[in-house]
Length: 303
Image (cartoon, rainbow, N blue to C red; front, side):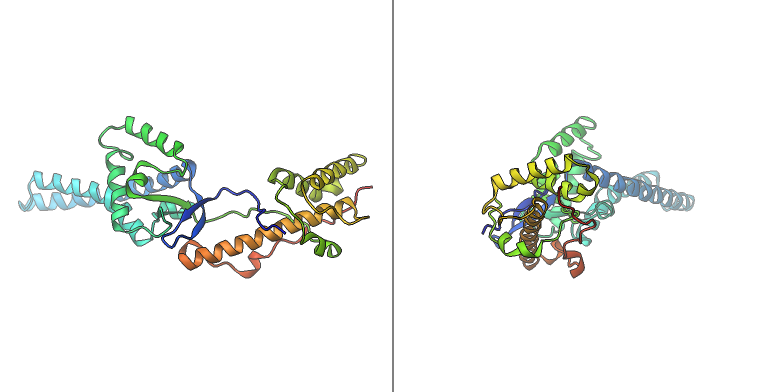
């Protein structure tokens, strides 16, 4: 029996300081840009409030001769520092790698070994962002394009700040990898537990799932022909062969249900290991959410 078969997911592997592999979904350019846009809006609001407050305080102080024009300008610079550096550093430090934008998009910044970032990593990311990325004070526009190219080409979706700080941005919210899954025919459960599924790739498994979910909507003789073709393809890449007299639809349902069972067990083991290394990376879920979904349609054998 082989338990290595699992559906393909957009996951990458991090190796923790304890030499444990953690499966994570690396955030790519799209979700990161959306998170940045949310933060930019919030930073703009914060800057507006700070500027109004500084202007009002400066006018009052200037009228009494306490402050001069140079000191007021220095306060405006302080406002910019608060918005561009203090804002991301404080949020990422207090929320363990999240800003409001990342929180809204379900993203988190972690170290390359999967651990939570500290103040120095957050500060390094903010300073590099200020100088090169956003707002990119050194080379505006040119540095923006260069930073975007680095983000899109890096295999782990890292920006320049991540490369300097030794961090990576991951998804905390993992979408369900499986939709409807057929129930295991009881009489085939023992046989299915002996299946070698290493040759069954994800595209063929997906085709089988779609066929089983929609078989009642497919007219004859197309349904029978398609079912037989899929059963032949699956039988060619799995062993042992089905017991004699097993209908094609039951055979396909058993193979797919067993594949999902093994993938679920593998995922549960990986989450348990990840939780032992860093509990925040693997939030607890209700037990009901970990159960495979019930069939929503009755399988009908081809005729």
